[in-house]
Image (cartoon, rainbow, N blue to C red):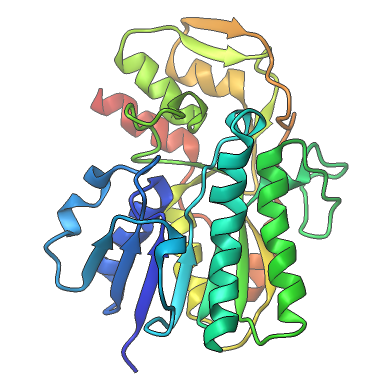
Length: 306
């Protein structure tokens, strides 16, 4: 059967890398939508003439029907913790209402494509246990984290009454190509790896919030894309959540020192976890997925390019 799939947030950091992978490794027809509020059309310009891809510059809530699609990769969001404290309604709309619109559309049409939702490890807050499993405490420290968890709960609740077929992937700290977009008004909250490399490129000091002791589990965007593709091919209904991380961590200060010795420390930002460290045994066991790329090798390769 021919596969027609929808990718929301297709011009974003993760969405565009997922599009590359789907074009390369499948024969699917792909519709991508993005309102370009944080995405960049330059991320997908090399696919615009591909007959298997169509780009729609619009919100998710502008989609009239999901019936053409067998799968939906829902990545569209405003993925920034600090702005969610200030631009409250904008983030509720982008991160919650655009998502629930798609859920309601499935119910309205009685059509349930496999729904792969891009969740976030931010929902764990500062965990009690490390590495953190999917069964550990949920402790949202920001509106962004709460919005991402709300969508998870809506999927869970609605699936008890309607035949939703969904998978939630809780990303830890994605990094990789296209993570830093200088035209994005939220670029100060991009992946710290991208921020550091951009600061080095511009001969600036690297800026660390807090003392740099905070630890992060970094996962390459290509591994994230592979996880999306892998779970989408499941022929059984999953209706569950999975961590997507490297299973390792590094401190922000150690990361910075791999790039430059010129470092400036800024005030600590509230609402962010002290440590993120994923247990990835569940996705390894159920989907035979493992990360292939690590942050230190990526930094070395990027430094060689500069």
